[in-house]
Length: 301
Image (cartoon, rainbow, N blue to C red; front, side, top):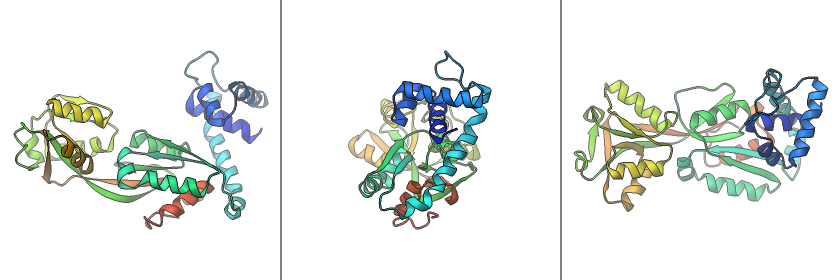
């Protein structure tokens, strides 16, 4: 059994597509298929169901995924001592990021600096929900992630708060709260809301606060992009909570939208950095964390 075969199998298990897995592994699709067939012959078991799209793992394949990931991580750690003293760092760095972190934590600048210093490292950036990115870091599918805090813990993942941002209410200029500038959650009973997805951190924070305040909401519109969210608020479909930075940028260029600050209770979200426990990090992740600690010394090394 070769590490290459396990890496190809894990790529297929994660992406559920031979085309996508081959692209990630930088090989032709036939090469990936041959590699996985050789692994199946060695294990004397079929690892995926033939003729299904997306690819569906067999029970044997599902059982192999986590041990294969642990084996690959152990192999990376075994080479860490050598790579750490080499002048050229290699490998890959898979980073998850929420959109607000691009603005608040200068993620693009951090990635650009790392890429300039370590040109032999392949860097992959992914955007997904916070809950999904935490799962991916814990499962070894991402090396680290810039996320907003959610009320859940993930095994084998260490999380550090980098920035705290206020959440505010965005309303149209003809709304009853538009000229007030401030409100309490209790003032929002029976309001119609525009919401982001149920697994977005803003939604989780707002839902918990409204429930605690005993606020009952009416029918709502749910979207999966901030762009559509803002368009619906502007169209009068409802009011909605947004990060303060996004609200300020939007109100500055859209006069019909107004910001309302919540004074009781104050709503905040934490922008955080999530990474595996130090002993489980790849060499590239350790170097990236070391770079981040210059600006954020609270991150564990």
